[in-house]
Image (cartoon, rainbow, N blue to C red; front, side, top):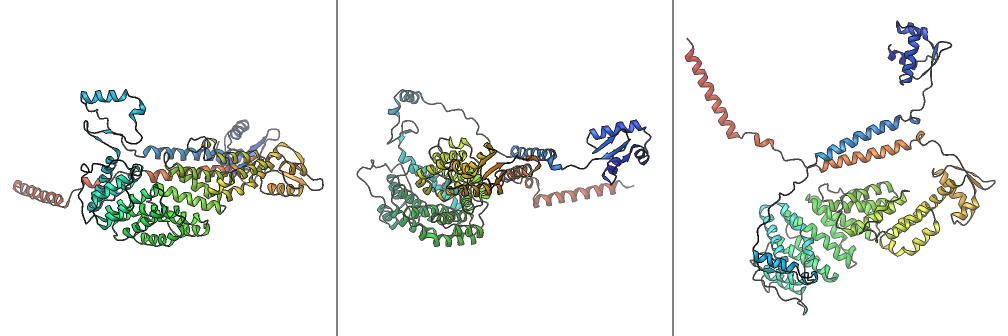
Length: 612
């Protein structure tokens, strides 16, 4: 039986169709009872939407129901989600990860060295580890202390700088910038004095300038044996090497808590970075900009360098210097937000383009500042998206202070969206103490207790002001009231406005009436207000699947999956072009053509000789 024709007849304007007429129209040779059986089977399988009247012998099509009130949208979205998750899994599997290092067999050591190590391991731990000096065994019995090892590390980094200048390869300079943080932990005045004596000519201008900031104290450790630390002193030192040593001096002054001297040092450092325009100097200058801004921030003079940062950003943009451009944009945003200039920060974001080739650390900072600006501008959805992206790009083990500030702001934004943060965030060891006030704030909002919210706000107001989240937290008062109204509507089917005002700790029933009316208009609760008798009646909740809520939720999930898929594709590392190795060069092509011509001539001569 051709059910396609039957479906077309049902979809037409036919209100009632007799079974005999149906057989004539379709031209089937089935009997009436066989036709009836097959129609019932088609209706049961969902092919037709109709009802059969056996007594009168006709079929009547039913009225089409609302598709969104059925499970069809959920099934379709479920198939799409499965398809997207399969694409995401394939993209993740296709990503290339670095290979593990091969296992190398440990070298055999001398018997005397092994005995010394056994005796050392049998000593108490307090005798093995010294807080002042740590001895490291290198090449037998020769020992070097931490300061001398630090000097050798810095010398290796200076060699990388010289190699980067000669070969014009920036990955050597990137390696130097990555090593600044480990060297910073071991940097002291003794190490810096050793660098000055090793790389600067005595009594020169640079030598005198460095020695002014490195006075030799009485409590200083014994002098190092610089004969082991050999270096060629040159009057014409590379500008990159001098800037690198100057940067180490600036970092040391910041760690020593000397902001006045650090600002003077950073100002001179900025003048030195402008003397050359090489790419290697630009890569090193990007890190100098950060510490220059940090020095003025600690000295509470951050607004003085705003014009300087704008000037250098303009130069970096014209020269396509993406590293400096990313750092300067973040420094300007930090400068504006430090003085609560949110409009200027928003204009800066709208007029500049953050480079896509920036590092993950700079991207995390930029997304954090962008999320803060969007939260101030009441765009909480965009702010939450930026903050979640910043959490993914931020380091997961280090940068504890940045992750604390990021989670504080993200917690407040989620509360403003009407969502509750995950409890596991408040249980992390490095975030537990910092997020304790925000945990109590979350509990107050979850309970809908306005009194508890006011107590938390009063107890931790100074801490919220320091975190620059106080203005955002003040907006949460409406969320607390909405949560309380929702709990009341779920608990009582009918309640007076006087009791609502008492439970929400409001001043009058008129305020309660206004708040309940606003909650009804916003769709927070389903209720009706009787103003004559002064009470609120909660209506029965409607079917959720007959609304657009499932579609909106699936749309958000699909958008999230597509975003992960796009990021996974961008993060994939593709192998370099290998097909060029198989291609022949011009000389090889000439030789091949010459050989082909010679072989063709030989074949033609052979054919001519063989001709009778």
